[in-house]
Image 1: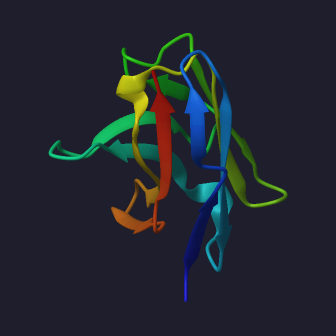
Image 2: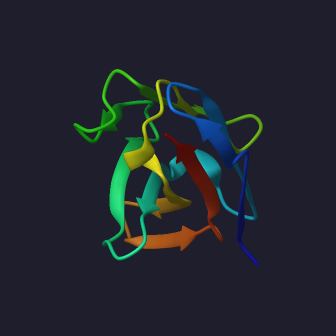
Length: 117
């Protein structure tokens, strides 16, 4: 059974930093694009950052220059370094793995990030 397990969420003050990590198991990690989504209360889930199997990165405008996504294919992990956090970054953050060739995708259980003002 495929598993994506997130860690690293928590409570931080405005301007602080957090590093989220997602460990994948039982998938051929290197062929999957990895993404971080977030969902705030009462809002739709939104794509925050993605990194392709080739390492290409993309970010939502709201997090550009503050967040950095990275992957380690040897460890089957993807990370999201979040700096200069704002209260509007408060959400549950989800790790997603998607094989673009087939559309097959998997989700983690989510990790809460709370930024206090």
